[in-house]
Amino acid sequence: MIVDDTPSFRRAVRGLLERRGYRVAGEADCAAAAIASVERLEPHAVLADVNLPDMDGFALTARLTGGRPGPAVLLTADDFEDGFYARARRCGASGFVPKSLLPRAELTRFWPSSPDGRARRGRR
Image 1 (cartoon, rainbow, N blue to C red):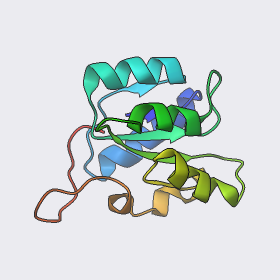
Image 2: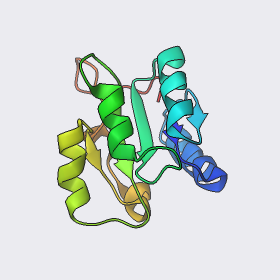
Image 3: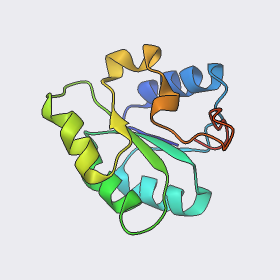
């Protein structure tokens, strides 16, 4: 699942993920829509922007991962600080990757693998 308030970014990331063999289960433009969609679609992984209009990505991640099994969340942002890496770990995210580095990022470092060690290419 992709969570970002910019339609052109969601479109670009969808293309990137699909070219890498991932299936995108859905998209959301804000945290509230993301929470509802994650409950409904049960994606294995979420790529979420830190800067959302109704809640920051750190709080969204804590909500999605806190207290129960949930999706692996990878956070991203255009404008970021070095502290985002530690904040991502504290809120339960799998990691943080700046948007400019997403095309080169090895996503299997952040998202679940199957028992045989290969990346799960199911619902994202």
